[in-house]
Image (tube, rainbow, N blue to C red; front, side, top):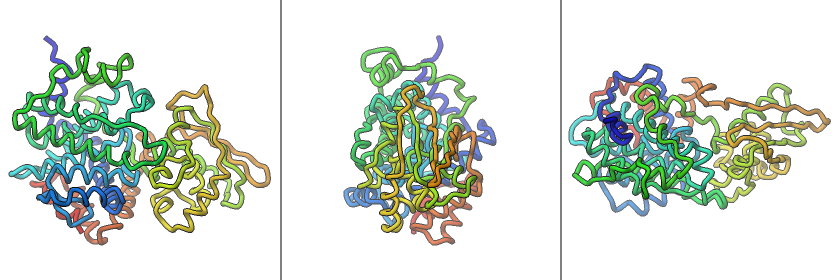
Length: 451
């Protein structure tokens, strides 16, 4: 009898070792880990993180809260570090969707539970498995456009499965226990796109809750709690039937299982905004560089985009950070006025930010009703003397087909980590991440994450 998808996923989590992973996968995992830690360190200064710590501060424990001197219970640390990692919208994308902000905090929190050393290779393998399971869930739910288009925020709905897989591997759960952990994670699978209408902070909460849920599910499974075994069956209350219905793609759970690692299709973000905005930023930067244009030369920037992308990123609300980072007009205005769309364009000098908001009047958006949901926009720049240039970037910077260089990832890490760590400590952390495969005990990273 052919094992069920749940059983096959559980066996993948329990049976995969570091030596089973291709070298390219190992290297990419290291870069995503460094990138996530940088995002989490910078995000420690965010309003969302401060609020979470103020509420959870009485849950003292041994797990590091990145970028602070706080030590909380592993569950609370997973929640806070997940929030921090997604707080400034600089974390990776293309997994569950924001896999780094979910999987890495859960895996790190799981190491804090362990009474014995956790090797660096075990932690890295757990991260790969977390990305894999989280992305497979999203694809089984019909894919990004279908699932998120229905109103679900996939970081919150699919993330718990990835976090549970990572935590289960770190904790050394059996295949039966891992099945239970994935089943238990279903009950913490939630998250709606309602935040897109007012820039609410819940978007960041979804990453933290997913990390917390996955860790808790793995620990409960280790303690003997069971989860539903009919999780992926076509039954009332099953995950696929409930979240996806007719859009479900059950085969995606196991297609190329153990051969194609989903972290390889994840992207690293050079800009501090929603991933859907990045190709337009690239396009505008390209036109400005090729034509030697500066802010005074640009009369208008016209963007022709799909209805899906317009609904997600077409807003002009900028009263909150989250709203600004979901606004394509704001990102393009930042490129015009500040020359970039990095984190400082959103949390930097108030005078520059005010100038950027004013420049949004030059950004024009148009919906192309015939454009597929996943098609990148066409950006047209009109100069003050009437010249026009148009381009579409099909592979944005940081995408698997147009990856950031290792040097760029390292530089981004230092710019982010520098918000809370001294330069020598940031370098020590960077070195430790790149030597993690040789580490006998990955738990030592915790000390380097606290100033």
